[in-house]
Image 1 (cartoon, rainbow, N blue to C red):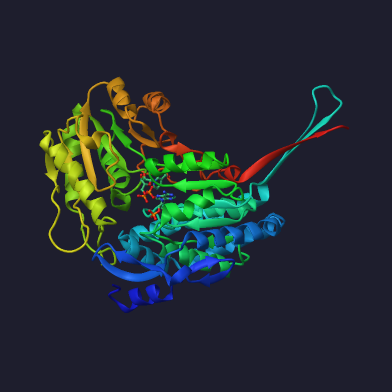
Image 2 (image 1 turned 90 degrees about the vertical axis):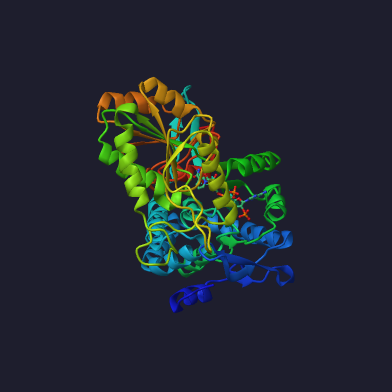
Length: 488
Ligand code: NAP
């Protein structure tokens, strides 16, 4: 339940229906589901619970709008994105409140996400006018080769709950820039932020039908028929590897172009020559950003034995001092986890590590009271047999392992089926380059605890995914290449 007038206002004002073809409508049979505040477990409001027919109506709208939208001037598409960037930035305080209420993270973190999320609109507003092609003379000298890039067509975008806005703008931005229409399905735990964003995009001038929003609890039943309907030409998914694998199978039916931003299990390697204070500051960011509920979250800390105790002590002090509470409260640095299952999974992983011999340096106990809180936790002497050495924790828990040789650290860091991001701290430039090259990950944070950047290609190796979002390659995911063989 919203607790203050401001909380009530942002909840009252947000659209709660399906957004299809520019109209807000109820789901078939007026079905709805509740959106919970994870800090209290109470329902904030109800939103439309789409049926498979509603999902299909959203696809109909996207398909109907595709041809006109693809024909708009790139500058016009860019300017819509630019206006949306400005509106999101102006309204950051209210959007942050909405996001904190439905997702739990502290207001300052929601504001930080909004800044990051808006950057995708600014970045792709600039990319919209830079879609290029190629022209060349055949090797024989007679014919010509013309290469053009065209919008791929209607896209299905499926986003997770952990970054309710940024995971949306990272897909919507390039799709708009490229000239694609969309159906987006936000996570059912956090649908409100995307509904708010859709209203902002309409205000920024996005034509009806270009972005259609489907909220549902019957996710598989509503999404399945869309994925296998030949009109969808692109599936962009951010979420767990398990669901991503299922969707890839479904996508194979229509040989859909897919982008998959999946799970992570990031290693955080600190060499003996690292600046320990900087490494601790980076670890705080890599671990505690988003309460640890980030695909980029440092999951396993490999610290050189010479600096392991100093690093552990300093990290323990910083994590132990963090203020835990409802995200809307002043000064709170750690909100609740998103739901009871998530909190229970984190507790289970910690208990398993402790049973196998890990030492709790701070945290480690589920607090009593309402909400899905888990305290910042540091575990030392963690055996490699602990489940959290292999599984994505998705919570505020830092397990510390030690090493003595670089080779040992790299082997351990790469010993995972995931490969999203790795963090590396060293002051030695040649070691930094050598080890960065050996880390099996799509991204490396070198002496920094955060890699997210709208202007850089974000994505993973191995089971962390397919494709890249952001940077100059981000728009390619929404374009098809066509080559015209010219008899000149
Ligand atoms: P999830 O359970 O995989 O859900 C993600 C989205 O997929 C939600 O919208 C969910 O809808 C939907 N979904 C679930 N089952 C589906 C199905 N059968 N068909 C179609 N859609 C389906 O993941 P999550 O728990 O929300 O997010 C956490 C995961 O996302 C973590 O593994 C994290 O590492 C990953 N992640 C990756 C990145 C990256 O860029 N690599 C970024 C952020 C998060 P419902 O909400 O209705 O279930």
